[in-house]
Amino acid sequence: MGGLSVAVGVDDLTAWLRRFAAVVHERRDELTALDAAIGDADHGSNLDRGMAAVVAVLDDAPPADVAGLLKKTGATLVSKVGGASGPLYGTLFLRMAGAAGDGDLDDAAVARALRAGLDGVVARGKAEPGDKTMVDALGPACDALDAAVEAGEPLSGALAAAAEAAAEGRDATVPMVARKGRASYLGERSAGHADPGATSVTLLVEAAAATLGRS
Image (cartoon, rainbow, N blue to C red; front, side, top):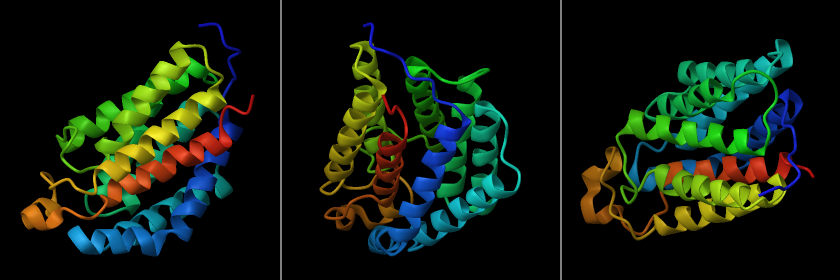
């Protein structure tokens, strides 16, 4: 305990969202190819469209506070992204907004907000670890973030640990047989491919590690 906490404000979160949007755009075809193997072949294009809409909001009418920014992001993704991804990503940000409270976020508040987002995704998708979903990457990321913040790691290091855990969780979905969503229809044939949701949420955590906690 006792690491120097870094206040994460609107500008920091805006940088995070812009970076995630740019990475999703760059990796759109990869995400869609992963989804083509076990899903609807639209995860990359849908998420790219949603994040482009989020960036448009940031350009035109940027929210003034952290909770407002996260809430607007979630609402925009719900309205712009189809399939399962819109409700799940929208819920992630809306729950983060609910946990953010007033003002900027300290290290512990960042961890609590992301955990609240995970809890929302689990409640929305009824997914458990091992189902081959985004939970398999986001869950380990939250665990690593909580542990690092609790141990007093600077936020930059804590988020780096979270990104590493997310990537490991993403890779762990490759041999899994899907138990949720369209991929579950394939049964054993869903094994051998990384889950597209676990892949995109890893990009989200990696973007956080690159933009937040710059202490």
